[in-house]
Length: 274
Image 1 (cartoon, rainbow, N blue to C red):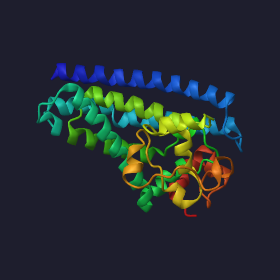
Image 2: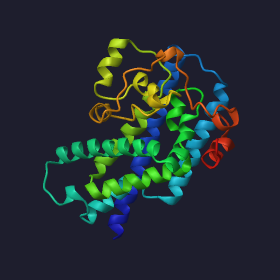
Image 3: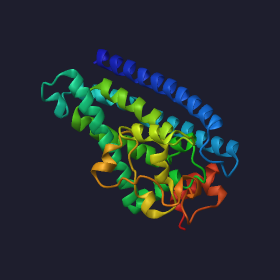
Image 4: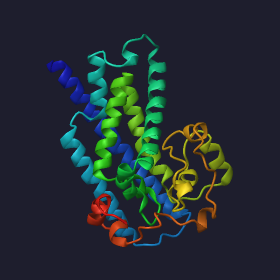
C-alpha cells in the first residue's frame, strides 16, 4: 500500500510540474504573439482582465489541490492498480491504449462542453467563460470554480470507465491546457495555415466563432483539442456571420464590467438572473 501511495504521489507531482511548466511556456508564447500580431484591438483594460482571469485560475488550482490532491493522473494510476476500466480488462499494445485514451477523453470533453451549453443550470456556470468582453489567451483559463470541480469529476469517471493509462492522462492534460490557451489567442495567422491546422486541432479562428454573442454561433465549435468532433456531430461553423473583425464577443444580455471583468462579479454570476 505504501509503494502504491508513493507511486501515486510521484505521478501527481509530475503532472503538476509538467502542467505548470507547459502552462507558463504557452502563456508566454501566446502573450508575445498577441502583442506582435493581434487579430483585434481589445476593448477594455487588459491589466484588469488579466488580473481577474489569472486570479480565477489560481483560485481554481487551490480548490482542486485541496479537494482532489491526487489529480487526474493519480486517479488513472489508482484505477490501473485496481484493474478498473475497459482497457485494464483487455490486452492491447501500450501505444494503442494511450492513443485511444487521449482521443476518447477528448470526446468526453467535447460532450461535456455541449452539455454545459444545453442544460440551463450548467450554462449558468459556464457563461462566466463567455461573458469576457474580449477574447485572448487568458479567456482560455477563465472558468467558474464549480464548473472546474464538476469537470474534474466527469474526467475522473471517464478515466475509471476507460481504464486510461496514467501516461495517456498526463499527455491529455498537458495537451488540453496548452491547446485551450492556443485556441483562445487573439492572434493573426495566414488563412492557409489556419485551414491546415484546423483540419486536426481547433485554431483560434475556429474557436473565436464559439465566443460570438449570436446564439447559433455560440452553440457551435465546441471542441477544445481535436476539430473532428464538431465536424462529426454537425456543430462545426467555419466562420462568424459578421466576420472576425466585426463580430461581437460575449453574451448579449450581460455587458456590465463588474460581471465581465471583476473577480467578485464573475464568481457571483451563476447566481444572478438577467
